[in-house]
Image 1 (spheres, rainbow, N blue to C red):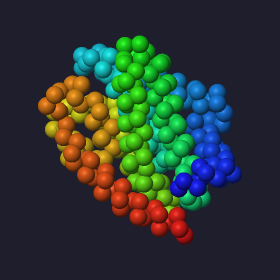
Image 2: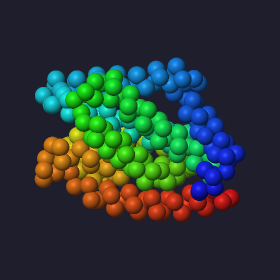
Image 3: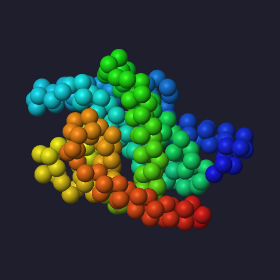
Length: 240
């Protein structure tokens, strides 16, 4: 993998492809449309956290910090799953471009959420950087599984529709706009505890309960097993 960075020509190709992947679909074809995409997601965070705070009497500041991070993660993960250029050209170069674009989108969306939702002035820089690094590492860990999901959805229209429905349902089964409290786990328990995407909430658990409202040992095991299995399949697919 290092030759992609030591070879200037190859590095330029990878970065160019990453830029092309980024400016597609709902993110728009230029930087202005991408900015509008980032702002609209941040506005969604403002609205959903205000509703949660009003209806369920939750801590608004914590909800904004939490959803700013988790939604940025979900946007980046969705990019990996729904990236059509990779479906058409599943090569190592395109895979690396896809991953670079995914991490850049996560960082951009997270920073946008932080500044637009306006909790940055109350949060520590160390916490911000820790969450940024954690989210990037989690995306890198889950990237083989997300790529495999994308490859499966590209096989035929029926599987594509099935994967889209499953991905949308997983949004509600993953603690993105809700926090994994005891009440939530009682209604969604196994679907959350075995969902590797649920690890997105792990970095916030100690802020609420020193005991922990959610045991994330199980999704960690599932994430590692899925990563190993998916990596084998994806590598074999890329060699074809």
